[in-house]
Every structure is written in C-alpha cells, then in structure tokens.
Image 1 (spheres, one colour):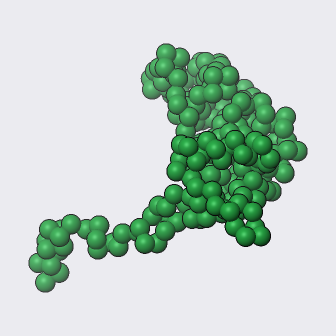
Image 2 (cartoon, one colour; image 1 turned 30 degrees about the horizontal axis):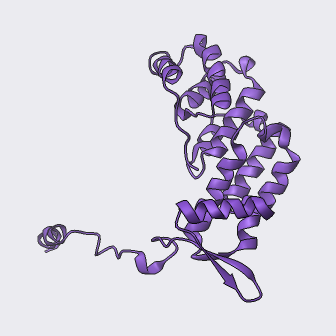
Image 3 (cartoon, one colour; image 1 turned 45 degrees about the horizontal axis):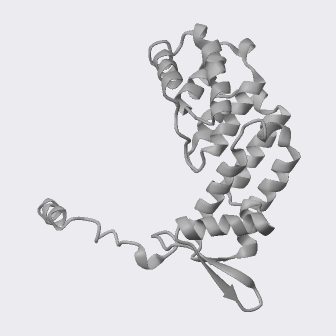
Length: 229
C-alpha cells in the first residue's frame, strides 16, 4: 500500500537527471531503463516516471507502450496515492485507447470504487499486463485491506477473501499474520463463519472522530472574536 521505497544509488543519479535536464530528450533512454529497474527491484519513483511521460509528449515517436504500461501498473500499486491519475493526464487520448491502457483504466476505476471482486476478475483476464510487474498482487491486497480498515469495524471472512482474492489455507496464514502484527481479532459468528474485528480508527468509528471545535486551540478562537466584532 502506498508508494514503495525508492532506490538509493541509481535513484540518486536519475534524480539528478530529472532535476537538471528535465526537458532534455537525451535522458529518455536513462529514464526508460530506470522504469525497468523499478520493476525488477520493486522500487518506485513517481517523479522520474512523470518526467519520462512529459518527455514522451515532446517526442511521441519515441514512446514505448510497454514502458508506459509498466508506469501505469506501478502507479496502480501506489494507491491510495493519486499517481495513476497524474500519469494518465500526461498520456495522449489516442494512446489511452489502446486495449492494454483501456484495461488499466478499468482496473483503476474498480479500485477507486472498492469493487474488488470485479477488479480481480478483470486482472485475471489481463495477467500478461499486470504480472509483468512483480509485487502487483501484494500491493493491491494491501490497498484492499486499507480500504476495508477505513470502512468497517467487523467484516465476515468471506468479504475479506473476496477483497484480497485469497482463500483456504493461504487466507488462514494471512489472518495469522494480521492477528500477530496488526491487532486483528477473529470471532466466530453463529451461522456466518468467522468475523474479522479490525482495529478502530477515526474513520471506521465515529466516536473517535474529533469535533472541529476540539481541534482548534482555544487561543485561536479568542483571536477570532475581536476580528468578528
């Protein structure tokens, strides 16, 4: 979930290129190689990828559909960050109409609307796109757990299984890990199997939400009154 850790030595060199030669088409090969490095090393640099997409706008004949697809898949893996939309904005509409990009846009829509069953079904039809980037499934599972934890205090095991696309013994191991490391609790519900109790937070528990007045220091309020009068 969220953006993956960035590389060190290679990232630093590319960051220099992006900082000082942002609009120099000569750095296109370096940025394309860096996208492949991100895929193989499971790292991520949004800035470098956005820079490459901008350069493609100036050099459309040099655009690599494979590289662009990998950038978009990495951006999906960064959800809930808005990286996918930022990248898509820099891709011409005619390119977006290619089948692989139409598929990725549909996948993005399913994730944004929390339609995880439809997402996994569609992803299964497009394995050649998403499985080209290691860590994709794990990243989306992390995002699904993030969404569920913001929405529910308790969820049936079946709902969790559908959202993260894991069942059986694999799901048992996943739950054991979450119980041990994330504060999850498993309850047995009569006639409905297991219930997963998620840690409470200000999003899934209204009682934990602070009133706006509570979040404003008293001295700030006292300063407002003279202005209003």
